[in-house]
Image 1 (cartoon, rainbow, N blue to C red):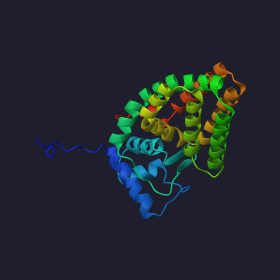
Image 2 (cartoon, rainbow, N blue to C red):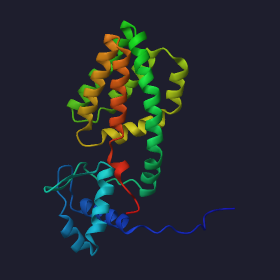
Image 3 (cartoon, rainbow, N blue to C red):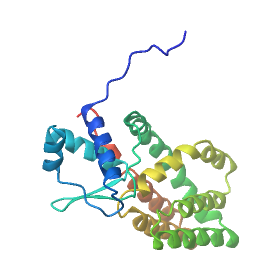
Image 4 (tube, rainbow, N blue to C red):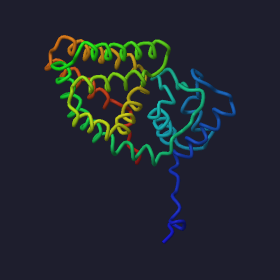
Length: 233
């Protein structure tokens, strides 16, 4: 039976506020670095409570579209507010902890094995990935391509085909967690530094240090605004 006549979902008030803020930014020609009106002004102009404004702001912040400077206002981080549907945010929030648990279990062991088994050519691949990521970050990008290259190089250096297959099977979810992390303010440079520590341990042949550095890195990926957001507030 077709579900075309399923009940129509009601938009939460803050979702409507998000849509209005996006419309305002477009009409006003705002871009990256431009400031939005203060919460109080937005509440007055939209005729809603400041609580609704705050929740809408959190949704934009979670998606990496807005930089909230406490006591200093709200600034666009992108040239357009291409807002992801809240239903998709909620679903990603649900599955992200499981993805991070799987990453920690797999990637800490891969880093340990890479330290024990890497070849000179594989060390070069790791270094090339770091150089690529560094160039991306220096140019103001997230470093996502270099990040992916780095983890792929570590996986190859571990010489465990079965674990490599496990990594390939969750590649899409890993990419999602990577994107979620790297769009946090200041995270690309921090992630690059963590990757360098992992690489140093692998180069030194120190499996325990490599595993610990990778564990620290993966756990930092969990420090994202999305996981502190409650869509029902």
